[in-house]
Image (tube, rainbow, N blue to C red; front, side, top):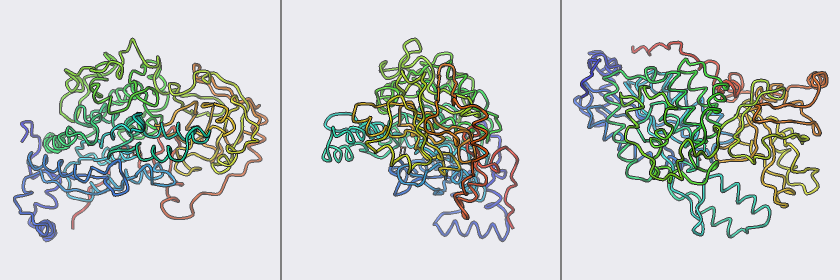
Length: 577
Ligand code: FES
């Protein structure tokens, strides 16, 4: 047991369920004995809830059932009592229409699982895109000590000796297939080679970005986020997290003590240095606001101008997460960031971020560059504003064709995804590489769930002539594994009458990334006329979770949290009668 105990066993939250000599507590104890446990298994011990997002349809978490046993081993070793609580898995490849529709549901589930059970602290097991923010948002709001166990990235993909990256190479080879450069046999071989082990996508997509961000916030053990899923280091990290959470209960080390404006600045700086996913902006804002920190998109843009991309990882660079681990992982990257981080921030270790990265070094300098030899001179994400996106929109300049960062072109407007999907396949579409493709109704309410449609396919006619990038604008998101001159998260979204709803084919649109501007060259009078003639579309859901979602979901610039989940107002502990 840790020396810095601040809590006696009778003050454990779980004691209310398991300690008293009452009829109800008799029921709780007798039902634990039904599992074969003895009173000595739990008496005087913190009960640790392991929130596990393992499922048989989530290959990113395929190893988490076994790894939960390693976490339990650590908890027993440190004098705790583990209880595994399954939570929804949000498998990015399978959940439709979009996992983003359910991130807040997972956050609610995590918070309420912890609240309603005799739990003193939580080990959170996730990694596939929305599971990280969902679990962290729930844990922040619940306010018990919590440690994150990232699932870790899968191994590199392989096809004919060629390295393949999740998502990024799918888009690339899909275009080659559409252009007739590869056939069905090659396509099928790639299908079998691109995902070779359990674990999350192994490019710097949303999963890798969010796992790293949570480590930078101080909510994982040092180095945890970079360990590949099949590596034995991952197993040991799970057991060590189990051991550590028990001490965190005695120390009363709750997320509020760890999460500060400086910790969120660290997370954003790391996001920029990694060339991380645009999706992270939404999630980090949502997590910060749960912690009572009023973060907005402007802070991302400020930091983006200060921190260059130094991780040479796809889709902004050329390596994969496995290489990043061999290069020293996130601890090495944070060391390479020099003075850019606030190293005095507290972490789940009970020590500071500075102590956690002490002794770390970069072993492969082409994978993790130095600040004076960056991959891209500015940060990963630019936030643009203007009359087309009054509350902002984002893009990832490092992953775009540089000629498109200052661009003026005529719009081709699509009313929805189906409209777009049909049009881009037409050989007679009137389109040039200078056109700007605009997709409406892909936002939080319109998608619904803000699907990852933002990397609109290049029209087939242009793909065949070798075009691989053009400006695309939507109120949707883009997979972190995607790339290109895609302008995303336009707020407010078209479905609720944001200006994107009024773009017509032939309008001129101008973007200037250096100036952070986006402009629809249509007069205010004409936009007002179009607005007056616009009829709001009917709500997507008449009942069920979708109806609740539609009623309460916030816009992208607010983090897409439900209005009733935001803030830090206390929720009463459950009564036990
Ligand atoms: Fe799960 Fe990419 S599909 S992390």
